[in-house]
Amino acid sequence: MEECWAGAVEAVVYELARHNGESPLDRGATLRRRVLELAGDLGLACAFDQVAAERGWRGDESGAESESRVHARVRFAAGTATLMAA
Image: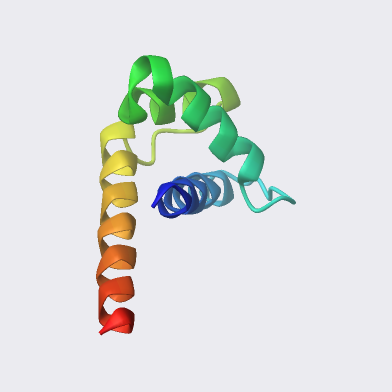
């Protein structure tokens, strides 16, 4: 399950980077680590906001919206895993 969360955070932060003209060669792994590092102290929504501020990304979406997309990806992955197991 932890891998599912990490993958969802990585996907969302990678999309944010791409929307802001960046092309992370590691598909967002470094950005994911930064978000998760900050999330331990701040929570996921604030961590997304902080990374966006650090990188100078324009406000395409709030940290809360990014967190919401992470939760949606995790729920979808969990549902898919359940269907595959059946």
